[in-house]
Length: 498
Image (tube, rainbow, N blue to C red; front, side, top):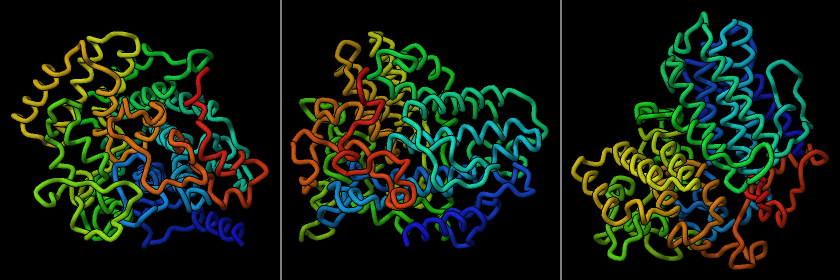
């Protein structure tokens, strides 16, 4: 029955579009189809399915894993790594392959049909972005056998290794950068569908370079082979990437009544029930992000966390749940800078580019350059959150006096990146690359009520997601081992040394 239900869902998603679905938009077609529509009518759907389905779902299930948020229910599955995580009842896979990736495939096909290489390029950039998010949560995934807009649908596709996925990501990005430099008869914003960059192809190129920097940076444990870590290549991509907050890749919301007009993590949004409270770890980190002996509160605390309780800000332990405590004892998760109805969903920001650059420079022992990039990243995020000029000045002076070039370490870079990348699933990549180290993330501990049947050791942390049960039902011969004792505990390819 599960096979039939999934197959029916795929067929419906491929052939129809529901007017009340979150992923629909008024001015674009979101159901994948290579009809007679020109590509300018498809770009908005491709963008919004990338953020509104793939990225949102990728973030929703792991906000407890990366400890931005804590659920009010004791041992909630994503907080304590159990139930849905161990049974494959988790839907990034479905959202990527049923909604998001088919839209990018159609955009590529239509771009070629209308001799519009800029649309082909955008399809490839978004496709690389979705492949990246998906492989970084599962490991081996499907690429060449997935829906391509031309071939018949294959419901038993073959998987490729994560290394092959990364090679595909880099190829797609390089091709897109080249195609965006060609002339096209149709502007990207011809029908106001380019909701990221309003048709500015140079900005799309910078976005592509930024994605390239992100994925090159994931290779920090690779020392040999054709995908070895290359700090200079990362720095070069960063310098060609997003270079101001004005170029941040973000999906904006109007705050309207329709679900696709509201930030999903806001009250009334599709995922607001998953973000009930800010976590103890995140709140405490904002109370002393520079890890000083005498704590200095981050000016972003009151902007991100909207509500003080009992005269202060109190987070909820991940996995603990309210456990009988009154709901008003902890700082609520909705209503802040990232969790209000009009809050954007950030795909990539200038601050992340600078933190990637800072890490790369730090790893090649360019400590002066790393400190400069680190400070630029911090300032970019403070400005993104509209921190006052006086507070920015004081915070940057504090960084100069208390850290400086001589004391800068990887923890400073990663903590600031953690704060700046709020709600972005990229944070889980960083935490795993850093081996969940409390030396890197001060105060980080495993969740309360963690699933001891699978993670009995104090040093055991979740490493990957289960493939969804519907994929296992219909394609078990091709998919990797989905035993939770293996899947959840085995590091991904980029997180192994070679």
